[in-house]
Length: 414
Image 1 (tube, rainbow, N blue to C red):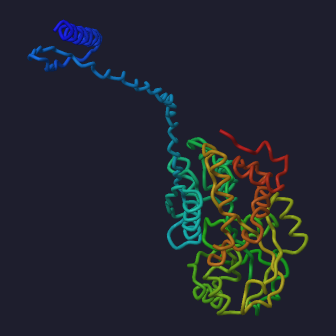
Image 2 (cartoon, one colour):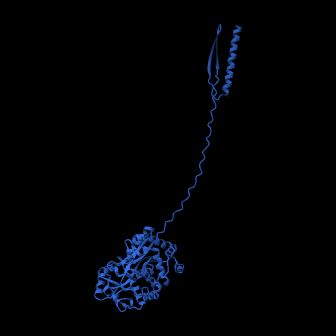
Image 3 (spheres, rainbow, N blue to C red):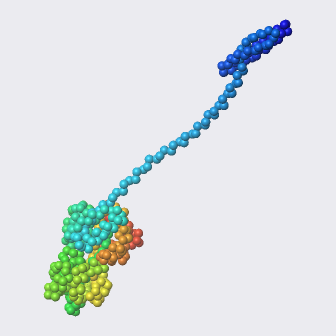
């Protein structure tokens, strides 16, 4: 009995120790203990039952692996978008262009020019037709045109205040702007002929003294040029006004109403009425003699006397041989208020295209043969009259190596 009692006591002590150890761990655990009731039955001679509460040792929960804090991706510093500089709207060049009435060579050429300048440069050209070259200049004087239709003789008259030919009397007192040489495009070449059966009567111009003739319409540059050249050699003639009809002029010759006629080329072709006339009748040249040529050159400085062969221009009358004519130059002037580059660009664009247009407009033929020289020759012919030159034309001739430094004072600037 004592021995058995001691065994029970030992078991109880073990259980108490186990319970104490479990309680210790329960105190350090973050998990609430689970209480389990264990019943031990010890068989001894007599039955002793004792209930002992045992708290099992919990499995410690491992500490969670810390999630590393991600390194933030740095945000790129935004590059500021530069404010674009606005492209300035180009200024549209618009020019008012004078010309002669519809159907004339001047009108046809002005239409071609406006087409070239619009296509090549984007310039807006508005064409205004007038009855005479002088009318175009008078409108320019009022400020109604930017590029008037001009002839070399009209420019001479402008700067003489109308005292040379009487077309533009008092123009300098009313003009809002002076006019300059800008673009020369074509010429008319006037010369005198008579019926072939009377050719022997005319050896020199002096033989025309007192005769009647059609000198082309009154007021035309061709009329003025021939009349002043005849006056330079002391020849006085009577002008008979006729329509521009080859048939009508032939009738006047046949009837003796006129003794001679002034005919002309426009560029490289006879005027339409001249072509009609020369196909209807035989003609012969009436040229000035050599001493008369010298008199003309002396009294009319710069006058463009030209010697050429009829075979290059006429058909039925190609055998007339050598002809001596006087060139009149026509084109467009410009206000000095128009910038140099604008006029320069217009000249360059015309030079680029003139051969193409000369194929359909024979008036442009002479200028198309050597465009730069054509400009320079006309400028030179007007130097004795001190006709101003637009800076754009001067720039062009300098680039072509055709500028004479003696012309510098004639460049008119704003």
